[in-house]
Length: 95
Image: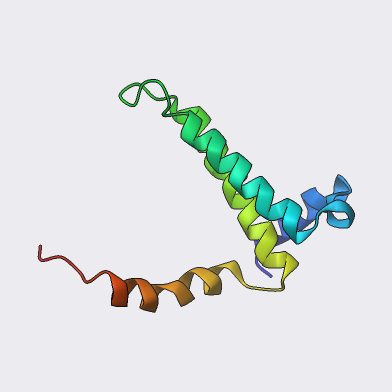
């Protein structure tokens, strides 16, 4: 487990979330936080609050990594395992 995962686990444990969070709660939380990220662009796409965007991205990542850890998956491997599918479905464009 890398340093980031350890920090996330420590944070979750110290708040009692390791005992209370289920896979369903984590999945729902990802969607809720993603909606809050989308909200950052709701009214004015040309003038966004970058700090709010950064905060919401952090929330999404924290929940997504927590869900990976819930299943015992390495989040890096989860992402890397998706590359072949993306490369197959979406060919590279000519640059």
